Picture (spheres, rainbow, N blue to C red):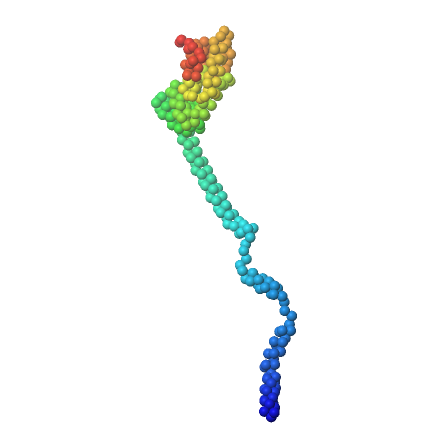
Length: 268
């Protein structure tokens, strides 16, 4: 009994000492307060954590933002390309203008030489050949020289027109068709004869053939009684025209490849 009492007293003393420890009491109080505090549901806490994690991730740009960011680069590239193109166009324009100016000056000098009062046929043909290299730009001057009374100059113009037809046949053919179709006394009968010969040499297609046929009909009508004055009124009166000139014109027309099969040449 005494031993039991002694043991009881001993344990009781230890418990008293345990409860008297202030640090221990503070820890117990914090644990109890933590247990007594209301707890948020697990799903809420997980959602809060996920939101915090998402905030740490780098934000991905959507398609519109990417397009906006690229638009500046594309605009810069387009502006640069357009600038280079325009620069090239302007430079090319300047070069072409310089070339045109140089060509005009060279053509002017050649035309002056071709129109000299006295010129050898070989020199005229050389000049005409050089002018023909300018193509359609030289055609008006060559057409004008073709109608001259100077045989050497006309020969040079003929050579030039044949040369120009190699690079610009359409321009030459159109000019010749215009000449032979004119009825306003602008050209002489000699000019028409030379034009007929050139249209026969060149294959100007349907327009050239139609112009030759129409002129043949006109000449045939002029060979009828009383038809000569009507034909003569369409030509430059600087050169007189009679029945022999009309007959020669018909023969020249019938000698062309375009009309050879459709008419019988008249004996000179």
